[in-house]
Image (tube, rainbow, N blue to C red; front, side, top):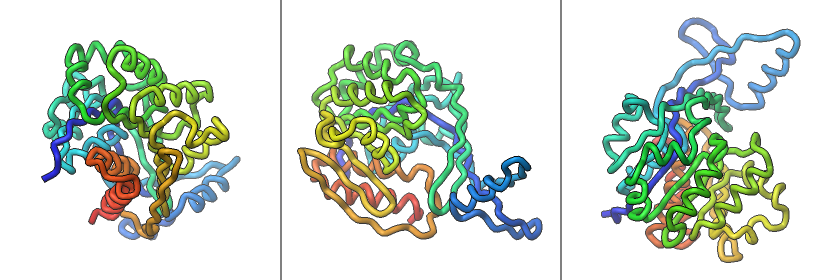
Length: 314
């Protein structure tokens, strides 16, 4: 039986609509979809100055957001989840109902964001509507959670705070938590969620704040790692004050820790069933393994396997 780790996860929540993009429609029942982002991009490029019509076919609508997807994966591993995020106001939205019922504590900060994910075999394009989360700040967190926040913070073995990019006030939230509660003695996990649209100064401050949390893990994909390397230069990855930096791609994953690096190669999934949420399942697998005190390479292997199972639904 898995250890009953107590994990606090926040702070987003999205209702995800997953779509395939029609490349050719023969009739009402026969359709072919764009298999790659470059092929879709070529169609869009041809539309410059002339416009075009794009047909989307809805695959499913489900709970989304980095926090709910990671928390759900950790629930499936047997962890006890305390969740804070945007999953409904005044009531929990139906798409999150089953998930919320399995959490130990749930605090909703407001209605969920909405996103349309266009999935291809080589990646995804997420079109987000973020109005419900743009103005959430440390005051929102305190007003919704109250004194319970201190209890959940203190009892947690792991605290995961994800989707930095979409919260303009996340740096202020992290600063508030650091100065109000003890930032040491437990494991912390952070996911930036593509910071390309944020100001470099804000990202530098985020990285500085992450380093001030004890035993901090920063999860990145290849694009995010390249952005941070361009920002901080030769200090990436070993001289940033962050305990563990994990970088995952389709074919390999690495962790930089203790002035060393550890790598696990993975087989490319040729026909993924779904991609939206793969990174969150990877992060859940890695964090759960680290909570079990597995070494870096074993933790990467568990993370890769968690992502593989999610992508292939096996």
